[in-house]
Length: 384
Length: 235
Image (cartoon, rainbow over the protein chains, first blue to last red):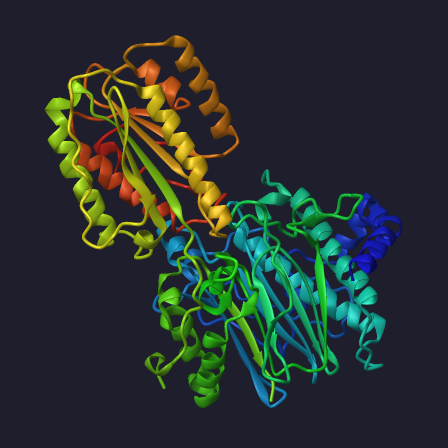
């Protein structure tokens, strides 16, 4: 895998990276995309917001409805980069900023982005974002982004990363005809496409930020990106930054689908907006992990989960005492003592009650859930 | 079905630690205010144990280490979490010299040792804090030692090895020297209002342990009770 990625990285430096530095190309690309990202939202979109006035589906214009994936559509501006996300967009009781609930493949997808108590304390909005989108039966796109606490417009960066990634994945799927041909790519192919998507998002944001009247820089929009594509033949993931992605295998074993990028100090990470595209030999890694990192899971899992780091202390084995080694280690495994009861609980309640229960569990289900002060996002797909 | 029927549990992850080293002058000149200092320290421990106005997790994250110094440097509390019902060892003043530089050296070494321990045991941690409290100049005053540690602290803070703050007590404090010993991050206590200072310190620790490293936080709330305003800083 490492050799493979090194080869591809070299390929990219020759073929793709030069393109990304071409300012003329920048302009033509950015004209295709409005920074607001609303053009990725279709009528059947599953992202719903309980209280978010900034919800793209509330703002979408007739112009903004996308008829085909490849069309370049002019969309009226809605705020991602241009305006701040309002702190008032929060359901004051549950602190839910954004929620997702939909049936799929006889199962369901459920997601919530919840404003953390430290964000209340510091009077900042929820800086997480997530999107689930069904492309067609059997093909789903999931994205989670966590805005950097130190970034001026973290919430807007998280929203931009999520919306652009979904849009670009859809475009890629159509143009590569993967759905039509029921094609499942090799690691090499997926790495090339994933890297292209991530570079393109970075480029769009860079271009749009440079057009803003306010004096902003790319880093003001720093946010992570976790991306997963579910296909009938397996799951493809790519990510930059921290957070967690994992799946429940056919033989009921929880496994990770990514290794978070971490620096030397705790909670240090990298963002999609960071300088990871600069040509480097050897290829750029953070904490021993390639940036971006991709994984492929062959075969359909029973469930997959994406989350921001605000959920990991409760639901992930990330700092567990290893008696033999005599130290705490990051096992990087979904904690079955949390994840299995979560799915059991969600399975056992009605579809109507599912979201409230999910949010209640994330807020109060365990001591770690209650104590967590950071924003929390969990996006869980359970397939039957 | 409500959340009460959710039978899941949290993964047994280690809490992210935050070390706070208190370096306190107990030389003879502290005599008029030593009892107030002891009272404030006791309340500081209680505030953390009972999470008074603090995130509940603070007591599982904040490790307190205490040095007292006069002509010698005395380790009063090894760095560790507070034990239930723990009362801090009483500080007693003695008529003697003020070995400030030696005390700071010990505190810096303690920070390094504890960070090594965190790394060896795989525990995540925040940037440690050193709080240096004194009511006068180092005595005897040795310029070469002061210049040496001033430079070390400046470089250490630049490398984000720890954050240091100085608290000057009483009217005989040398602001210039205290600033040199704390990378210019020194404040003067209003009167002997140790209570307000430790209230602020516990609140600040609560804010820090609920933040992400790298995040800018504002710890100025309550600080005007005992000093002039702080600037925002990076955790």
